[in-house]
Image: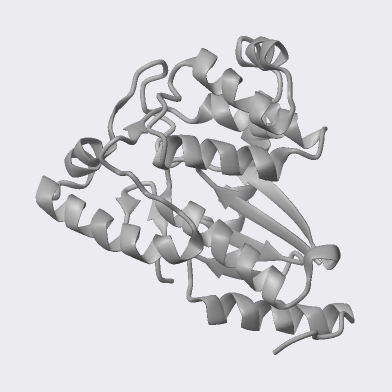
Length: 229
């Protein structure tokens, strides 16, 4: 079963959706029967490169909501995410232009490391408060999955893999994707957002039957170009 995912690093629902999908795959015993393919998506491609700003303040200005309202939403999301092993620390998260990170995710694909890199980058942004607008900080993180920091820096200073990133953006536009996370299963069934666990399980079970995989056990939450709801 092929599962393609469009997402961005600065999207909390993308992190939550990743964990929900992984839980469903584990619950259904599908670890050996699924291929997960990560695709790039930028929520704010016009964000200035090389700078970072506190996430809550940035979202408040972008969406036009009072800061205390943004913080209340983030608090609710933090409580929900704890059940999935996610430690959201929104107070220290620093919004940045994610283009360079997407380059490295494509680079990691040749080593079969994209899923691990995705997890590392999400945790660095949402939990550890690392400034990912700085290439040196991004490159240091790849060593956590056994990749070379110096090679990562070379990638970041080049145009390499930018065509692949752009191809992902184009594919998303062709599919009509306006918010992430967006999951496409076997090129035909879509899940938009970090839906309830039962949705992931039900969709995967249906696709298992279509794919001839035996069942082994029995649009809420999206981020769009206008922010997270």
